Image (cartoon, rainbow, N blue to C red):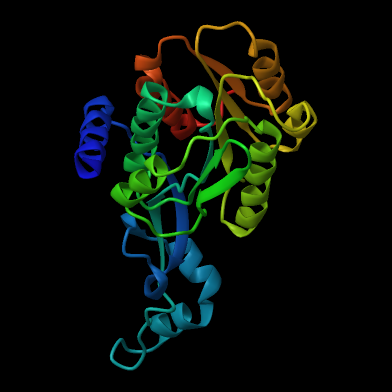
Length: 259
């Protein structure tokens, strides 16, 4: 039964996915240091002259049989896919059981399928926060979904603890190249344990809040968290739309952070 559930979740996630163009960033390295995933590789004469002037001049004044540029002397410009670091912070309390949890698993799979090799962290919170995946932990999509659906739903919603755990993951990823991780928070905006977490929002480099459900209760907090977190608020009124909303968040992040 568990295998069937995971299979159905992954199948649904694949149906949501469309063509997403991952942004590229330019880099320059020696020929010897080119990464295997480098694209649009081209010889960079200016960098080669600047970094290996003696070797280049040696080629000009000596016969080509007596002096050669090595792989360390040749500089190449290239494009590489920009890594997207991301932390997902997900309410798994009793208010998020049943269909909500299943659709959340689909949304989670959408993210993991789009960023299979990127630093993605996953946090589930109810009575307390639990780290399901650290940023640099290698884990297949199937294994992560199995880990997620095995999380027991508890009665209380400790939103403050969930956001604190997300901040700890961000600090762990401070050595990653590029921008600090964005955080996507899935919540109905209500908490039944801990303090009002609004004071934490300004500590996030970029916080996207997905407000779950039709109830207006919690909307004010969600709006405030997104504003203070320099991100945006998206409403998920119909649960069935959660995977597609998550897909739109993924595309926004790939295009660049939107306020």
